[in-house]
Image 1 (cartoon, rainbow, N blue to C red):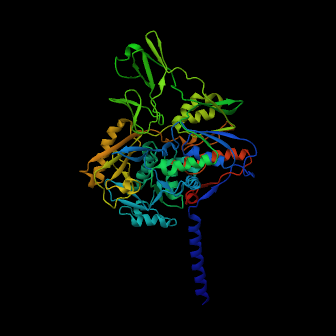
Image 2 (tube, rainbow, N blue to C red):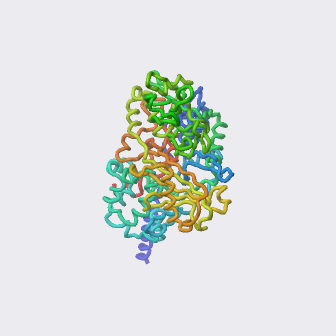
Image 3 (cartoon, rainbow, N blue to C red):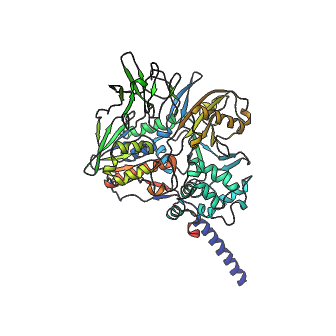
Length: 619
């Protein structure tokens, strides 16, 4: 009897140890430590912060600061807030329908972003998705579920449900698998940041089904070419989205256009807090005095360098593209127009009937007036001076309005930050920051094409697919499955994305639309004979590059200027986060730095697990 009792106790202890071990290995969210130990609930003095950039990073910072009594001016060069999340109405067959930069998934571990949207009442149109399908050319469809099963049961569940994957695809001597499960910020980047993802897959013995249906399809969602994507960043990416968060792959889509469902209530929330939101307000430069940022000067810079052209080169009729500007003859001399779209500053090109913005399908007539798409105004007129046989275009703009500030947050995309750094002579005031900003870059361009067909797709189609093994298509969003008013129509509205387009494949939007349509007809056979009744094609280059060896040089939120801060998805964070969540979290952290300096309670920042479940095992 005593022996049996001892055996029972031993079994119970072993089971408890197993349960305890599993409990300890579960990924958990946590609060990132506050910058300071503020005690006040609001600032005790008048503090004015200027935020440059009205995307998610800038709006996140503005909300945190304004809620603590800080006076905030948010400057956005576009006519609307939102950045890469911005949307706008378009006309299709006489009806107004929503358009946007491209499909966005709102994942459950976007803690900061979802908290911000919840506060603003901007999360009411979220449509939860129960699966994350991966569609490849040579393998069966993978329907990954939005599961919250505990580790490692969640991984075993994936293998059990997969028509392709098995234990043999992940077991054995696979250094790459060990690296995935043992993510550690310092160790992972020290060891693997110099390697690209494709080389890591090969050297980590991960080639095969696991690479084909998990690593490559999900990795390309970073919008970086896998041959240019740091292996360490890729592991951090998988840790954030799959292995290191307790939320699984659950995400939501927007049931209405982002400008209606998210950005309008978010802007109203900011303005209700007292934020001054100034759209159509570009910032020319940051002003410095005594080692501090003292404000910003408003106004667009016509050119980085003045443009000169021989007058004889300008044709008798039509416009001449002189690089950054267009010039033509008039009855009294010459006129010039800025080659940047008045919507969001994208480069505009000449077409037969005027000008085309490839980013968002904006069109201008031959006189540079907007006629279609989101551009709100005509292309900006530029000064033209005749100097003998030379035309000098784009004289230095007059001084603009100056906004004095106690602190400045630069919450722009990396490309805009480059221009602002040069215009502000950042190298003279903050050389380390200037060097870090210059080292950052954009990923290869991407294309977004939305098609309207004359018939529906199969009713069992998911709302969103990650796609792999095709030359062009990287994802597909079936808008008629989740977003109004498309859900009310009898036809299919589908968006195809091509990410990280290789330099040798760069073309115009029409070429991408043709190539993506051909693959879409193959992927969705029910559309092979369908007629495209309308399409919107865009090409852009504004996502952050995460190349090998970029991480060490990436700028952080706090800078060597004590009252100048950065925010955006390109900024190095002390915890794993990507894309929209990285933008929102960086904005909140920038605001928290300012609040800490005023002895004010900061906004909490929630993160996924900081390290992989097996970091100590393989460390």
